[in-house]
Image 1 (cartoon, one colour):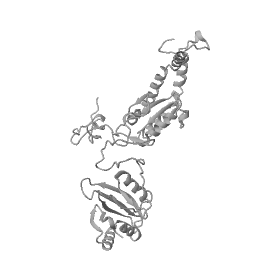
Image 2 (spheres, helix red, strand yellow; image 1 turned 120 degrees about the vertical axis):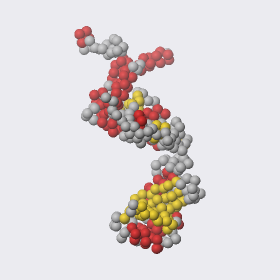
Image 3 (cartoon, chains in turn yellow, green; image 1 turned 90 degrees about the horizontal axis):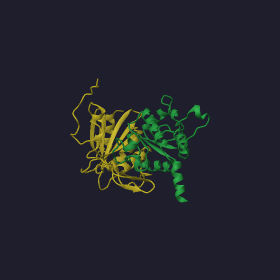
Image 4 (cartoon, chains in turn yellow, red; image 1 turned 180 degrees about the horizontal axis):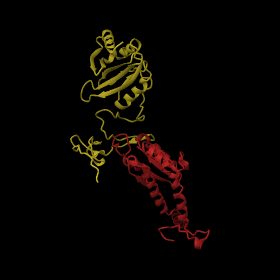
Length: 202
Length: 173
């Protein structure tokens, strides 16, 4: 079986559920309606031998609807094929159906997406935070969450305070040069110093 | 007895007897048997391990007894990035250490948050517990940690714990 066969099998079975198809450098990406995601995943696992869920990630298209995009990376150990499925969730209702019942590994991936991006997964058996602590009120990877963070306090568990950003995010400069030129400093776009070549002092 | 060398010893005069102040003797013992609590939280801990290994040999300064129990430790070496999730645990372990106790903030992250100016990282362990010595570097080399340890020893040699207790006692009478 080849990737073209996979695309053909899915589109012929779920014609209306597939809203987009992209191929880039030999990788196949299918965009799906949120309603048909679980059925397509089940089909991929049972009929197309995609037995391994590599990863679940999410994207925040801030100020565009649908705001969230959820990306599933599937792999078939049997056929050596990689398939990427994408679906969407709106700002008002950031929820999709869980795939925990298909691949148990989805449990922690979905918890991470809930923790960092605030996406709910209907039917998830244990949707707790996984990186931040229970009671932390924000979802830090959302675009409207500031890099420096916000005040929060869960007594006896953890607290947070905004970090002093001094006018810009602290980033390294991707140029040649001494440590002084490259080291993390408060920089904005366009602030980067011109490329310098390091010449050792005699 | 000069200030420069408070536990001077002249074998011609003193034989097997040393005259000194109690504070000086206590400080001498404390500073040369600092048992570290290795609070290894990130890559600085690797350099901390190197400082303990044969090439740098922290045992030369009497600090080789890494205690993984705060009850038996004298100096907490905070080696690495203190996230907010870990911060109260670090504070709790510090509070479990018996007095007298000292803290070395090893590396940029423990001292100031380092390169992590973000929502997840405490901007310096001195927001929560008192720090005696800051060691710069990202991560610091083992020599830098040893230098920090020697500075802490120097600091301990200048303490007057017994003298303070005596003053408190006299004031209470």
